[in-house]
Image (cartoon, rainbow, N blue to C red; front, side, top):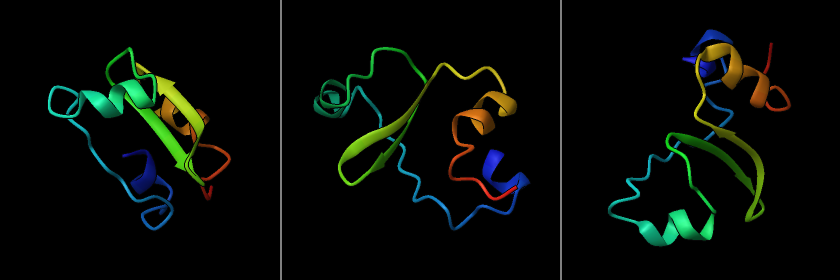
Length: 68
């Protein structure tokens, strides 16, 4: 929704990971809270948004990449 609101469909490749099926990824990226949104660039976590409560929180966390 945060991406659609600002026409940012092409900005990110979105991957949804089920941590019960891929606990190795949760451990690798240190995901302890769910949901967690990670921006991974060049194999490094560039942004982490844990337990976002609304679209504004997500937009603030992704502001560096969003076209507003």
